[in-house]
Image (cartoon, rainbow, N blue to C red):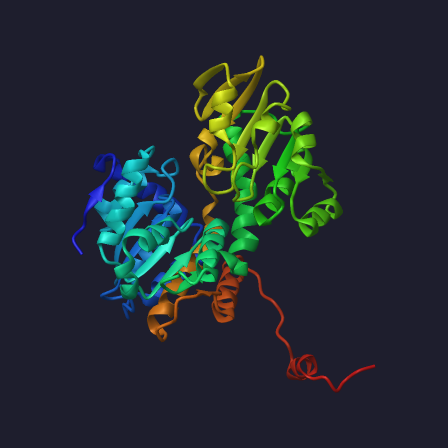
Length: 419
């Protein structure tokens, strides 16, 4: 595949290469997979199209696919998360076709998605299911060419399961997000830390002593709430799921409806993946100076259209990534235009946690190519892959664990033994 690209500036490549190499230091599991595939080239002749955040960590995943012999094309899954220097380095130094520009418009975003599918990939990688959704709308005939798609996010898996349930899913999908080595670590520790990193970089606010609302108590919400509390915040959790709300309460957090939380919040962060979690009714209740941001997925969790209609005055970019809305004399501050604050205002998850998520992507892709053709459905990551990644991560961290003795294994697998 010819190297094509639409990036900001190829001259940024040297800076990008340094960022990629810095991230590589903290991605030992992914590096070990790269060594495993270098000689055999198991993906030779395979075209991969990836719609992911164009970051230094993602670049290292693309390098693994190149090492395995694949032809690789990368497009952005979020216009504000693209690191232009990384995009340039991938093109210049690693022979990856990249269509991504930081801050690209919606039309350009979709033009890039189309470029990915126009390459007729055999495997697709998604972060939110935009690529697969476009395929189901405008590229249905190509579905038969695709061995499998890998989905990285909770939001994307929800969309794909909805497609499957409706009987309209046209290709096999691996729910990478649902792997334990992904959501238990990436979503909890990665989102927890990087979201606060983005908030602090954008606002320079002191977290200690603030009343912070975590909207949603899934794995991302758990991580954010615990990290905010660790920095001294008083944390409130809002939920629609009784079990998750109960868990939050048992974890020591205050739990209440958003209508109550909005009245007292100094900062609200949405982490749900759903529509209009913050809406007109909540904006009316907020106190002066409240900060509102999103670390879910798409920019729909905060109803910005409603806020714009309510506002008597809007000041954009009063700080980098901070917009000010005046509503009934009160100031409401929106971070990163309602997009992912951890990627727009910071650098996303630390490389060490993305090491496991992207190792899961890499091994799943290799398994799909080696295996038999699958029917259109959403599939779980195999236990074998999960255990392999966990073992390699533990080893890289210098830890060893016990193994079951034969009699212990037999005991656990039998029913005869008892009191």
